[in-house]
Length: 297
Ligand SMILES: O=P(O)(O)OC[C@@H](O)[C@@H](O)c1c[nH]c2ccccc12
Image (cartoon, rainbow, N blue to C red; front, top):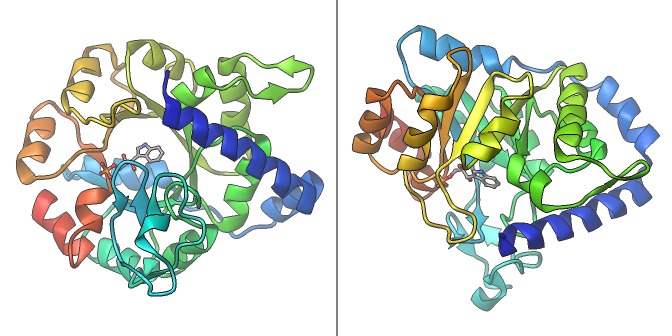
């Protein structure tokens, strides 16, 4: 079992409860229904692939539980020791500009953006998503740990065009629904259909064959394979390659995590994997978009 994921999900459930207490479900629902129009996330990916180009979902991620701070500097008002796993709440960072990063990604040919909105473990925020989306025309994935309908409405209100459903999160965490604990597949289907009804796409994330079997029971065409093992934090691109035989041809395979070099990209493309989600490698570069072009074009 994955300790870090369990910890994140427990915090997430508390955050959702607090958000519901400060803004009731009916209010966020009304806001979601009048939010600005969604952008076509799946269409943006398909359009690159149809042109024979790699479809890159370029991530904006300030920090991660496995690597700590990825971009920016810790301001003198906070201490580096605050930045231990799961304790990023009070750390202030300078030199991290989501709008500037988004513009650079768009200019260099990204298909879509992914923006971390989890605060405690990834130092993300809804505000970063808003800033990034407003700065360009790319569709945006809200990268967070979704458990509850409420978060899907929230995603739309902040401007997200796509949400992430992590299969292992539903398997791990017995999140209560109406009338007790709800079956993981039932919960994923509920969140998927809600996202679709709000005009958003869904990226479903798997790490092994059993998770893939569940993911294939959703209707979304986008299957993400996370190359990172959330227990050990090790990444192996083989994780994606080993699942390819089981992928129906109508699905779009998105390889996620641990893509570091043009050779990694060439290996995956040689196996007809043409959609990529990349964060750390871009975040550590001076100009994230220029690094995107170096890896992919
Ligand atoms: O920074 P990387 O190794 O390029 O990985 C990006 C992305 O795949 C990773 O951030 C990610 C994949 N699935 C997630 C779920 C939650 C948070 C983060 C993630």
